[in-house]
Length: 143
Image (cartoon, rainbow, N blue to C red; front, side, top):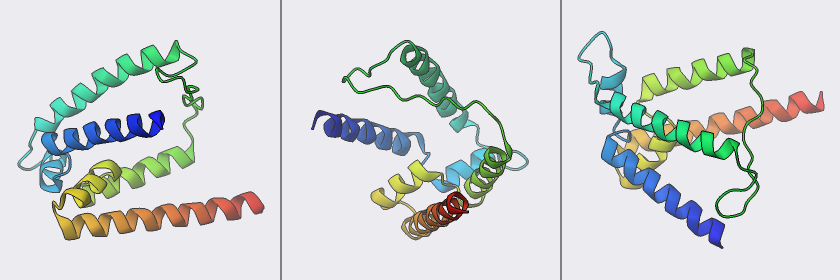
């Protein structure tokens, strides 16, 4: 139960942060990505803040075997940059640039009712992409 409450609290703070920062607004995100046009650099501060928090959090996490709530720490171990990572990153970036959403902000925008139709289409496409990936992975493992 304590893990569920802490996950809910962390998700709530994350979602509110996405709304306040403008990350759940696809027009603001697309303005940030439009370097050749009317560039809006404000999300660079959001990104900088996230990097600072992430560096601190991962520095602390690497020194621990248990989380602050007592759960086992499971940090990524694979440091290999391969074709799958590159293709996935390119697809993620292209989707972000076309839609103005990435997964977290897309779900927040859908839940908040912002850009409702666009967020719903994005989330549906995201779920479809996840399902297709899962089918491909299962067929790769069984082959």
